[in-house]
Length: 87
Image 1 (spheres, helix red, strand yellow):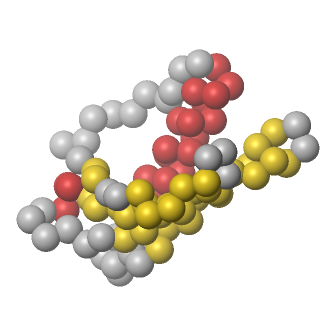
Image 2 (image 1 turned 180 degrees about the vertical axis):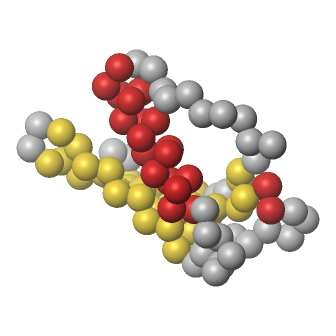
């Protein structure tokens, strides 16, 4: 469903990778994601940056919001959020 290559990694701090969506057809547009982790008092702050998105990628914000919410749930409760299957 998704592929990519690691472009840069700083363990515990930063991950940069290409983002190639497999659900868009035979010629997917490659974009770039950067995940940054930084200490913020007793917790960590995760920033997700997504670059080089085509104009038609209108659902990306909602997708990242859902993924971040599920990750938060997983870290707090041990259980990710349940999502309906697409299709």
